[in-house]
Length: 473
Ligand code: NAI
Image (cartoon, rainbow, N blue to C red; front, side, top):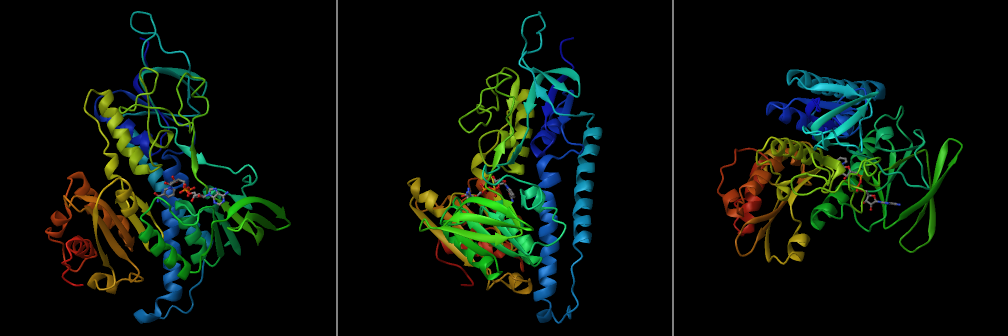
């Protein structure tokens, strides 16, 4: 028999392991290959999960330091045990990666550790000619499957003039494991990672300077919301050098001197002890062109609407392909590709993919910004409602700076975009993602009963505000 499995998945991040589980559920014999010793990929090991663990711990530390007195709690002797904090982070990561291992076992998915390499030669078909699918080399053996799903993920982009040294100049991976709080951390890039990990270390006591090439943070977010978030982060003590391009850095003794060009084109320097470079991630597509897989102009694997590459029986999903580099986007692609392989109508609705930044307050969005909606030719009506008057928000720590903004089509009232800055925005966005799935109007959301007292009432008020009839404002 020419094939060892129906499906081989390369990469066990949220895209790969979810694809493997769905394939197994559909009765396909499945093998997953992972280069690292633990499963879960970037998200579980060095991404979403450890960063959220540190965001939660550092937030508690900041609250204990600055916000407890008004609750009548004397927290005057708060101190930091960074190693204990890191230990908790490692425990959470190990629970979750262990959980993925158990899921593989439960679903009878074969797990092979080692770097998986798709070979150029396709397996022989039933009649002896070239069949579909692929042969994959892993840890000295070659295995073949009718279908190969590439879920290799992505890795941090390294600036040529600022290479990672794992100590002073680090990627997000290094910044998740500093052994001591830096005195002055320079963050290169005010994207998602810069804002999240910059927040962690600022809360733990570091001076944090974020140097960003563009004149604003989060250029794809709704302008009003990104400005609101910027203002709040500045209030928390983060320094932003916007419109400044980092051009180099020199390690000098215990420190680093970062060189950047400011908005007027003048060269400036910034002395610090740690630099985190977070200027985006690139797909891990090395070796795939040699295996005959076509790449696009950004070195991502080129796919059609059914995740098919140019090679028959070879598919690609997640950070390796077009679209936002988000764990939940990869997961849904994993489900869809497995269903398509099994002959079912797998599909991902790219119009309804939420985006969340876990700063405090959080920023959560789905759909179009007001600017993008207008640029697409929509006449829009917006509804905004702040967290301040909301009863539940009043009882929470640090909720006063939040806002919900809905963007609706002026002609049809259909929701085009939903944006939340506020605590728990990551959870609040879920109802709006669902609203998008059902092509809801602002009126649909406004007429939905929301429990009281909850933050979700702010969403209802914002929906009412689209029609200029909020009850409490
Ligand atoms: P990013 O693409 O979000 O932001 C990179 C920033 O660096 C941009 O604003 C860019 O203008 C700036 N930049 C580039 N070159 C520069 C230079 N020489 N000097 C100064 N600034 C420069 O990339 P980031 O933050 O590294 O995140 C990578 C990926 O990881 C993103 O696609 C993101 O979606 C994903 N991610 C998602 C998270 C979430 O969903 N909560 C959390 C962390 C990462």
